[in-house]
Image 1 (cartoon, rainbow, N blue to C red):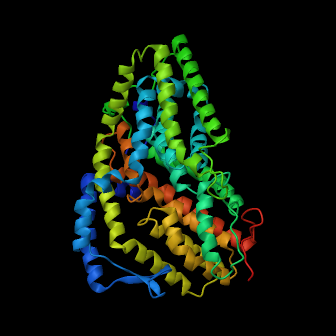
Image 2 (cartoon, rainbow, N blue to C red):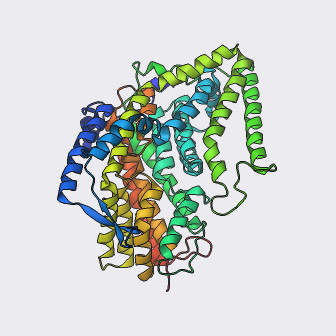
Length: 523
């Protein structure tokens, strides 16, 4: 079965999801949606500034030693107008995911256009049971978020190719991978850089009332491993039973940009096997090179000072690693099969890959300025601090308080995408407050992580949201913002419900969250 006749018994979404899709797709192009949102944001910022909307920063002090006042800033102030016009090139070029995307896609363009992706994916799924594709993709996606940004730009588009090669709807694969990487952002089988980052902030909050408390980055290990186990069947069921049957078939009008992504029919030839073998050796060489950079004298990818940031250079280098791996493997495959005859073919393939990203560059320009201007207005910071204050002032049971923490985090995440930025604002208030109520810092961190991940996949403020839309549009040009929202909302809702139930059970049963880390705390 080809991608054009993937099984989709219900071509039109119905009910609430259908309304969301139809309404969302009637909206203007996403580029202009961001411009409209910028206009609305400017008006709100002016009104908020005139009304004196403000909050006290939980950690920063002014010159007199008093809590720093965070005031809403008008985007029409002379300072912000100057910032907008003077820093426009820097705002665009500094958009967080832009460099990652361009770098990885340079290498992926060679691997794709040489035929490596099509042949490798076809060979991989030829004998594999199709029913296991979704759980494998979801599991790899959740574990793959150890690679942070690389998982977004590498795994998610590959998931679409894998599904297409298996005769399934590629957008279902993209959705499953997006749900795993971003919706299950904190779910994993082992602690990683996010644990080190979050627990460093948790420690600062906890030490305001317990100076002797020190962070253990494995403090949520059992909890995040359980999240992985429980999120896996949720993503599996939603993808196979809810999302894929409702997707519109690609049909004969599928984007021509998909040509060559999937090998159509026939057995793998001897020449292609030779190409795969050469590509495999190229991958081994790149992996060995990265291992050498971690273990040889000098260890440029390991911080010799140790501590929580010991592995940070390695994690941050993975984007470059994927670029080099795809580039080397694609060239090796193409040289063996004849699709790459000279270095000029490689340059052409990289140029064509950049051409495919032309729409994303336009979209990134609009998104970068919206995100930057939202930060300049201080509205997100004020909202986060006031939300934490509401929870602090309530007198509710611990389990209910933790549910409120989850829900408030999920709501704030729609406006502030960075996990560390939100936790840096919330932890100084929530961690000591919940410790006084008998909740351990590890439990507070776990509750925060549930809310932080669940709504990543439905907010356009998430830096990679426009990129996911572009990945889907490569397969289906008419796939719009409403379509992506309708596809991802079920994942967001059920991951939030599942994670919230986990939090309540953990606190009620008093389960350990990690080695030496309980859910309760005694002063």
